[in-house]
Image (tube, rainbow, N blue to C red; front, side, top):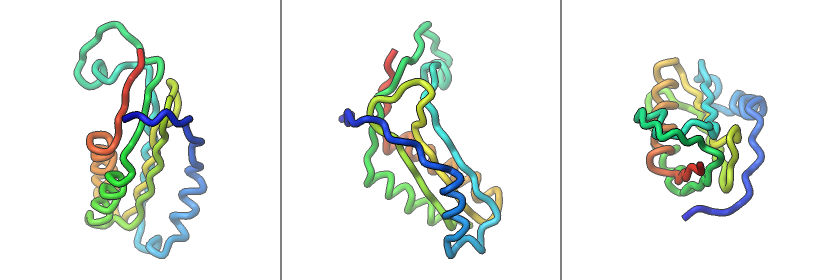
Length: 135
């Protein structure tokens, strides 16, 4: 069920990185990656499946299951070389250009961090959120 809450204010990635670098695990980290998902005008079906019905997205209703997100974060921490994970998800009625999510991953080496970011974003998108595009 979609929560009709008003969208949230986006976090400061500069602040997130400052906090991450003061975390006790920071001494083991050699890389941070950030993902910023944004509501786009092009429908998901066109981008992912090549289906073009001529429509454009005008907004999105977005909700998430916090317990599932927490589980996905725990699973990410179990991956090789991952020492820092932070996730922010918006909610409610979003407009084109609004932030949907931010994900920050800190780890030892690039392959581990890239794999963890890919894993966590995919897990969130496929198992934890509800996105209803409005056209």
